[in-house]
Image (cartoon, rainbow, N blue to C red; front, side, top):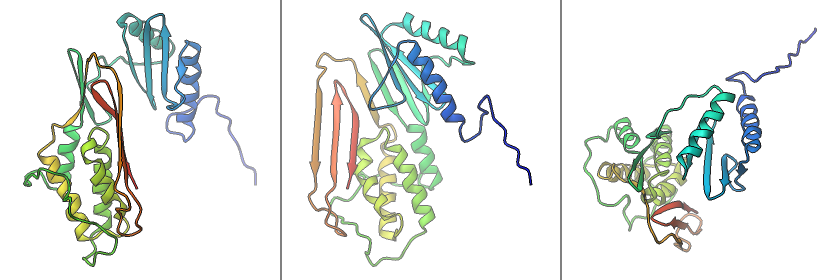
Length: 254
């Protein structure tokens, strides 16, 4: 029985290797323009020209461009349009579920629309609000003796909340905590998850704000609860870093 093998000379959209082929193509092109790839983020490119800077970030076939010289940004966009079939969407206002509000000397990033979609999906639009995302005195464990809940429903809720932490450092710790019980979720864990939703209901406008400032210094804070997990006595580490006016990196993990 004969088998025919085809060699594609051009990547087709939708094939498994298409994203890899596209990334290889644009990576070579950006490097040829004088960009330098970030050592810690493979999709971030930076180009310096005298005192000017141009920054390009990739997400599959979407590009974000910024810099301190508008003429340099426009030149880059025109050059890219000559090589690739592209559309200039103008000033960024919405990207991957994140809302970007750019004002004079400030940028505010939030997920207000996405937060409302989560509340609607889990029928919590009219729920009562709470002032904190979790009960500080409550200790969650795998075997709490309560009835088990629908794991599919619970995992869907956790997944939605995890994406919301992209602009909400204030819910990162409780979301990280309740995500440990996705394979043994009980009614206790579900109530803890829905408490986060009630907190979000009252804080849908929260996000991360970056302002122009004179004190451009790097600050970092870190802490641990020291054997806070009831199940395995492991600790939970938390940290966040700010540069200038706003926090740019945060984490909470066991």
